[in-house]
Image 1 (cartoon, rainbow, N blue to C red):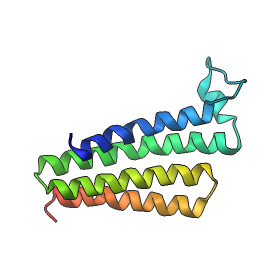
Image 2 (cartoon, helix red, strand yellow):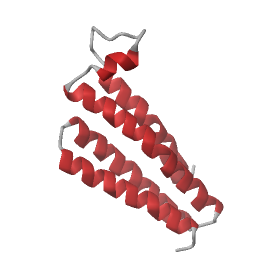
Image 3 (tube, one colour):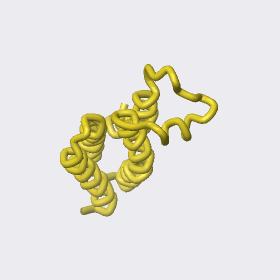
Image 4 (cartoon, helix red, strand yellow):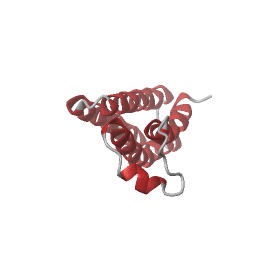
Length: 126
């Protein structure tokens, strides 16, 4: 299987993982009003929910970059490299978010963004 496509799949699932972290093990979770309940959370649950939102926001830009680079017949090793860097940076971003390490979180967010830009550069032939 294409590594970049596998990365798209994993990155697409990350928001669901973050939502699970935010909700896991809490007895007062209200499944009738989950968004309202999540919005009222604090601490790591609030950070996990914020990581969920950010992961949903980052996914389309990354996924389209993989598709465009693939359609442009960019070097597959380069596409895979950028996709892996994006995936690893997103995992580190989520970990830093949960650990309340804002500086590291921003660093990993930036690394992921630059790797996604690399996919667009590859698609454009740069």
